[in-house]
Length: 357
Image 1 (cartoon, rainbow, N blue to C red):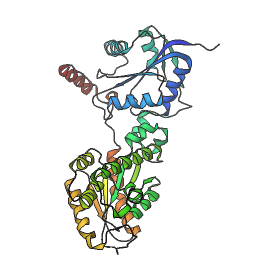
Image 2 (image 1 turned 90 degrees about the vertical axis):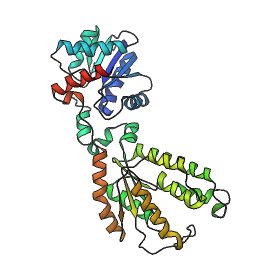
Image 3 (image 1 turned 45 degrees about the horizontal axis):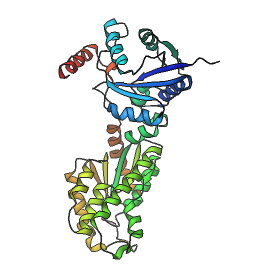
Image 4 (image 1 turned 30 degrees about the vertical axis):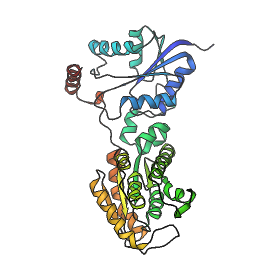
């Protein structure tokens, strides 16, 4: 009969959560009646602890997940360092553990200090040859190793927008194809068709809240399943707020506020130099240039980098790609974890944390 434990412990930074972490947690769940997963991170790291804990909880709903800051220096040869970490770990437990599951050698000493057995999972990482260091060094190469929730949080959104008949949808589709990723269509266009009264009925302000909600939900779903760390979106909250101005006749501060809290990494504005094409749903060429200027002003006032692209589709794609790659690279960077920093910096951080506490 396979050995079974009453209460197992798994600890980690989950910076970010990847398939190796999940394999470790599942091994503990298979062999134990209860499993506590402790998410222990430092204040110098760039993914909030509560976000990491949510990832683990979604991926492993039967585990008990707790999170805490641990700014104590990391030195596996120091008894004082071990005491500090163990005190924190023990304090987070709601009951003693009889097993510690880990893939790394530190698990043996931690188990001894907790009076528990150590069970090492995939010690050579032959089944799951991935680490947090690997993921942080090259997010794109290890994107498939991440949980859907982690992909949603870590994915970079690039938004293509512009006045009517400036080729934004065509460019969004072309950019996604070039980047080997997914793209999100404009929900507002669908709503224009299905709304009561169609295009002839006056627009209500509250309709734009619905459009924003559904646009963000489309993005959320796409972020969880897209094949690379970048998602191309044909419009977003800011564009919807500007169309509210056009169709309702007044700004919507609440929508602008939502736009500020839901920023992409880059805006790509499609130029209005191409011929206007009436597809039966557009206002007309007489307002296109004025709306385009409104987009330029709004983008200049935003805190998001943006570029305007002109010319045919290949020319626009070629102009946009370098800016996209730069924005995504900046967005995909991680702060060094505590243990990768010089010892003096670790000690200073711990002292600062104690003073603040």
